[in-house]
Image (tube, rainbow, N blue to C red; front, top):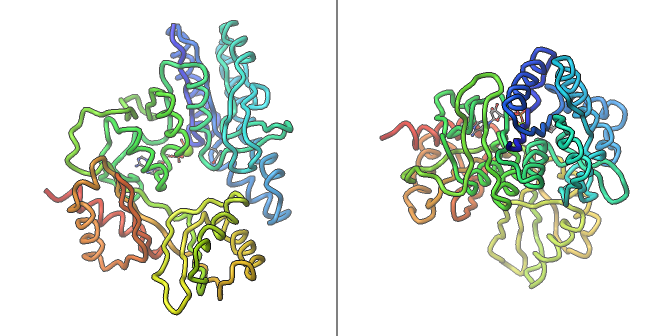
Amino acid sequence: MSLIVQKFGGSSVRDAQRIRNVAGIIAETYLEGNDVIVVLSAQGDTTDDLIAKAEEINPHASKREMDMLLSTGEQISVALCAMALEGMGLPCVSLAAWQVGIRSTGVHSDARIKRIDHERIQAELDQHRIVIVTGFQGVDRSGDVTTLGRGGSDTSAVALAAAFRAELCQIYTDVDGVYTTDPRIVPNARKLDEITYDEMLELASQGAQVLHNRSVELAKKFRVSLEVVSSLERKPGTKVKEVTKVEKTNIAGVAKDTSIARIALIGLQHNPGVAFQVFDLLSKHDINVDVILQSIGREDTKDITFTVHKKDLEEAEEILNTNKEALRFHHIEADEHIGKVSIVGAGLMSNCGVAAKMFEALYEAGINIQMINTSEIRVSVLLDEEDVNRAVKAIHAKFFDEI
Ligand code: ADP
Ligand code: ASP
Ligand code: MG
């Protein structure tokens, strides 16, 4: 008997019919003789609708209360799915993350899973029950409900798969696998049979929302067999693994991220310790910083430009302005209308022609690059937000349509 973790995303549990469909997939896996832990997201647009409700009441609601609200979406899904399975005569139990003991840090809206208690789930599995757990959430040291960041249910699933040493973790979604780019933007994007953890991690971190980036990080760390499959069609999906058979002659994919904003601190002192002061301050407020660019110092001043998540922009500006005297900068420039497009591929950096090909595609499309950032297996460019989709199409065509 094997243990299988199956996660179903929001569109897969959107309405009663989809929940019955999901219950059918779970039932089949269970009746084949497997132990099954199911992780569910909130139905359809529930999370967005809850955010809109909160904004109507108080646009500056605390992150703790937001978590209290948003965590209810997943609770609805698990109860409804359990009811569907009960209706089929199958033994099951739905559990919220606090009932399981999915222990997380206390960083509301962006918590990390620290460990998962085994007792409750194991007791249910021992009773041959299908266990249906709320994704996207945890419980912190004070017993408060936390959430793991948008798309975090994937991470709940992989964390459970790692904690219970599952044979397989299946991420069921509305696409039948990982594609060379978002098939909603480029309809002729190609499905990948397999992709390495490292490539998937970069794609997910750079905005390919098909998997939550931390889920891939955990899968790599704990060697979880991970698979992205369609909940609507029965066909093979994409396997995410340590090494792939395919020889790397091309990039794995193109990702875009329009959830970022750019902050420029103009006229900082050109002294040692300035960058440390700025980023230490932001990190103490749990604000993650991504692409960083420092200008060449001139006349004893320099500028530092970096990106943050759009949701953190207001808070970041506030913190920096509050500390303006200590940081000694002239002024802040902020821009919300930017986006990032990235190409990812193992071995990319050992082939400098790849970056040139990306820049050529942008040049041909008449798109201006604002900042460039690279890792060993990635090249990212910052652009005007309105150029992002066009850039994805042009770059994808350059790498995948030309011979
Ligand atoms: P779920 O609700 O199941 O978690 P998501 O909406 O979070 O689903 O993720 C699936 C979506 O991710 C797809 O509908 C697709 O538009 C988008 N996507 C972005 N990049 C990719 C990619 N490289 N491959 C497949 N899907 C992608
Ligand atoms: N419901 C949450 C969201 O919409 C978590 C998830 O779906 O993974 O972001
Ligand atoms: Mg998702």
